[in-house]
Length: 240
Image (cartoon, rainbow, N blue to C red; front, side, top):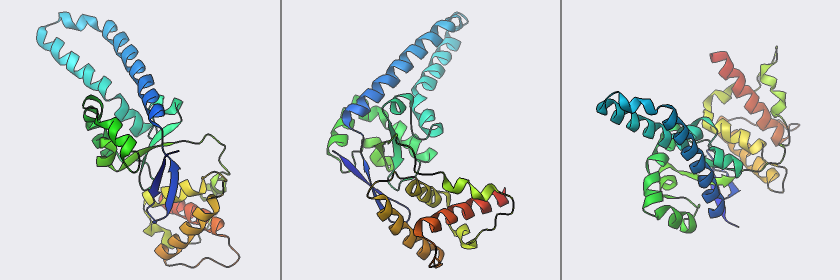
């Protein structure tokens, strides 16, 4: 069973199960069917455009081709790293630090898609690279991992930061960035397996060091991370 090591922004190593070649191929096949059917329907619905003039027809065809080809790009950007095919196969794109890929990373990954598909290099690199990455993944610093469907262990403090009268405990959280907070959220949402406690222990120590604070003796490491998360969101809302 292939594993990929996710090194978070706090230098905590999370081991995610990498998507298999079969899962990635089936996800691609589902997306290919969607693109083909959708493109055909749209082409038939707008076929009258070709009769306006040759230049308009060429521009229209190129524009529609670009929009259709960009389907994986905008789906992964606006749907948490998943196309329809990836969602069906329960896999998604993730950065090697555990965060959601940036638009730049998604764009780079998409631009190298032709090399992966038409030059046959994608399959080779997925099978033999350390983190099961195709060429686009290597360039963008991403990989594709399995998404567990189990119920999350809890809702983050029921979003305490939204409640009237909420008082933050750690003003130092403003030192963190969105990517680091995303890592905290991902660790807290990790399923209740034997590694979850170890992840929380490691991350809590790193966050204490990054913020220059000490966790109170009567506060568990999980409670500390949840408080840091809520405090960060509180200050983020204050800045809006």
